[in-house]
Length: 326
Ligand SMILES: [Ca+2]
Image 1: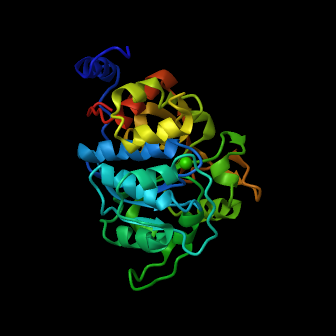
Image 2 (image 1 turned 45 degrees about the vertical axis):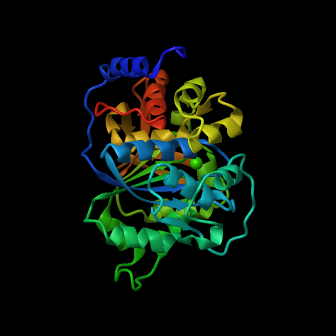
C-alpha cells in the first residue's frame, strides 16, 4: 500500500468512502477547539483534521484555546494555523500561570515554522477569546471540541458579564453552543488524564455547570484507533509541521487517536452509538463513573465501527484527503 502513488491513494480512499453513508451534520458548522497541545501528539492530528475540514467548507474553524502550561504550545498552534493558511486565527491561553516545557515537539515546531505568536504571553486570555467568538456567532451554532483538561472551559462558565457580553459565561454557552464534544473520562467508569490531571476541580465544575448537550469520547474509544504511522509518513509532505510533529513524537510508530475521535464525532455523529440516559459523576480525584438515570443531556460514545475503518478516515483527514462521505 505504501508503494502507491497519490493518484492511487485517492482510489484507495474512494473504496473506503463507499463503505460509509453520507453522514453530514450540516455544512460549515462553527468549531472552537480547546487543546492541551503539548505532551501527546494526537492534538496535532486533531488540529490538522480541522484544517482539512475547514479547507473543504465542512466546518468553520473559529479559534483555538490552548489549555497548556507548555511555553511553546501557543506558538506551535500558531505555526500549524499559519501553515494551513489561517495565521490570524484567534488563540487563547490561561494567563499568568507557571510555565513548564514538557513536549517532544512544541518548541521545534514553534522555532522551525513561521507563526504569528512569538511567545505564550502574547496570546490573549482564553476566556476573552471564547466570549468574543461566542458573541459573534448565531444562537445554537457553535460546537466546542475539547481535547485537553477543562481549566479554560470552567473559567468560561464562571466568567462574569463584561464589555464583550452582558451575559454571564454559563448563559452565553447556553445561548450559543449546540454541542460540546469532549475527549475525556473512561466509560462506564475509570480514571482518564484529561479529567484528573492537572486540574480535576475544573472537570467537576465544567460538567456540573454545563448548560447544554455534551458527548464524551472516552479513553476507551481512541485507545483502539491507531493513526499517524507509516501512512502519514508516506503521504504527507516532509515540509508539513504535522509530519514533523509525528516524527519528533515517535518517528511514525503509530499513536492512539483519543483527540481525533472527538473531532470525528463532532462532524459525523453516526460513526458511534451513544449511551445516554444518565450522567457522568466525577469524583474530586478526577475519576468518573456513569450513573444511569434520566436523560441529562450527557452521553458517551460506544463502538459501532471497527477501529481500523475509523483510523483510515482519520489518517485521510490528517493528510488532507477529504470526502463528503466522511
Ligand atoms: Ca489532548
